[in-house]
Amino acid sequence: MSTAPPVPMDPYKPLSALVRSSQAGTPAPSASGPSFASWFTQSHLAPTSHPAQTYASKVEGKQLLLENPPRESADKKRRIEERERHAREKQARKVKGLTGRERRDLGVWKVDRNAIRYDRFLALHRLWVGYMHELLGLSEVMRKGKEKEVALPNATTVAGMQAKLVKADFHGALLSVGKSKSPSLIGLEGIVIMESENTFKLVTPKNELKIVPKVNSIFSFSIPLPSPSPTASASSDPPLATSTDTPRLAFELHGNNFAYRSGDRAGRKFKHRHTLDL
Image 1 (cartoon, helix red, strand yellow):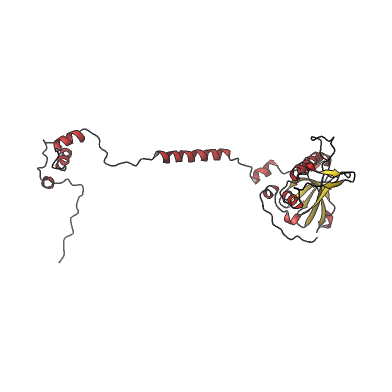
Image 2 (tube, one colour):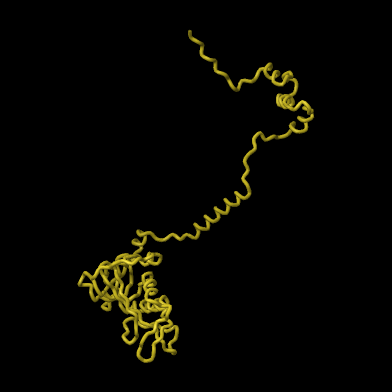
């Protein structure tokens, strides 16, 4: 036995007058009587109240919100504004640097070999010596008598010097290759004009530009001590590392443990490593 399919119901179909009148027990509004909103509101009020008076005082002629819209609190709005302001300030402080391609296009790292003169970089070397005096705290070093014996301050220890030297800038240092797996590099000496992750660019006294790899090389350099003479002015130029009549501190630099860029070394924590015996 087959059954007929159900008839679809229209949910928007208006209610009949019979249904509307049976809901409140009152007759449905006529076309000439009050509106449906007035009739529906008065019919659903509590029986102890006065429906007509309540409708006239609280409903008639007024705009009523059928839904309570969410409101943002003042604290939340203030937090959002503060976060946006900090983001704008951070973006304004951020300085965009040049990319590697832009540096190559501008020729930032290109060196004109024809314009290289050793005597032009002696001023840079003097600046580096003064920088080392300040970094290692050597400005208070004094000689004892006439024997040129150097007395380092108690606060300046060998371990403290090494911790500062591994993070120092070597642009302007006078380096010499003491040991290397390449025999042609041994004895090479010059002023550092550029340092990369794996190489030093040196200007030799013969006005030549040499690129020396750090790996498998041991470099040596010395720092002349400041003059303890009371007549020496604080603004006088520091002595050169090539001067032979000035006491100095000599150091060795193992290239295998130094293969980092100068900017990366400043924030890097170094650990003790074994080096090759060249």
